[in-house]
Amino acid sequence: MLQISSAHGDKLRALLSNTKLPLNDRHLIEQAVQKYDIWLTEIISVKGGFDQKIAMLVELLNQYKTYIDLEVIFDSQSDFLYRQKGQLKLDNSIMEEFLPNFITVVLYDELAELNLTFGPNTCFSSIYFDSTLSSSHAGGGLNVREKNQDFVISRKLYLQTSHQPDFSDPITKQTNIAYVAMECKTNLDKTMFQEAAATALDLKTSVPSAKYYLLCEWLDMTPISSGTTAIDEVIILRKAKRLASNIRSNFNTVEGRKNSRHDFEEYLKAHPFSVEMFTRIANHILNLISLSSEDDVLQKGHF
Figure (tube, rainbow, N blue to C red):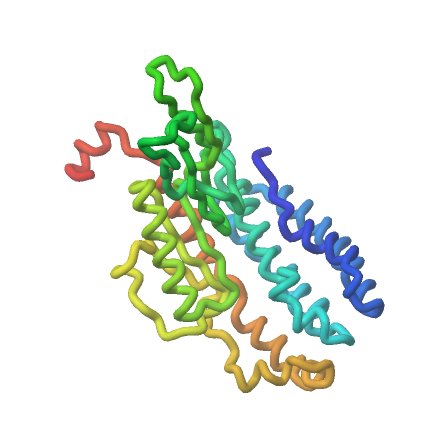
């Protein structure tokens, strides 16, 4: 099997060591760890054809994400898990882990021999040289700027510079080169969109052939065309908008969540993660790795 990510599992287990975790929430997290272990095993065990595997994986995602959102965070008898979920990354780390595992399971045959890494990573952005006329540094003082990415398909990259033709007294840097980058947002607002557009431009300036996709669970802004930016596509994984702020304000207290539980549960059920959107993600990647031969190009007449 290719790389299997455990980003979410790591967050869950780290939370058990968090001294700020209320005692009455500890059993919720202990049960979540058990559920998580089963969930990961089920993901790895998915078999079938392309469409069948995607449908099964998205169903597993819907079941587990609803469990964490509703039965762990929302049903907590304290406010710690709900109010600190952004800081704890308890819910959004699910997608960080699911995406690389999803790609691994669905596209295993296509990716197995390509020596690629999937998941959150730090990737090459640009280089600069810390060098002047009056001072001499090994390799011209090579420095590499890098950017943290939520999800990338990448390869390791080694850079070496020297002032000598035989590369004596060199400086060597290790980084990663991103071919596909995906920014994952729980709720996508306008500020996040603009930041993603800037990141996409930086990525494509250094790697022109790279693709950049912006994924979100819920849309929290008026849609803006991605065609005017370096973003290749914005994909709304639940095909739905975020709950209105006046409704969400009721979730800040235990009593408010109890009174709103039915409505919240129904909203989640009405807007599950879309098989169509995950199929779209898989097809985007499949198209990138299925390079046309010269004969195919000549038959089509364009490339």
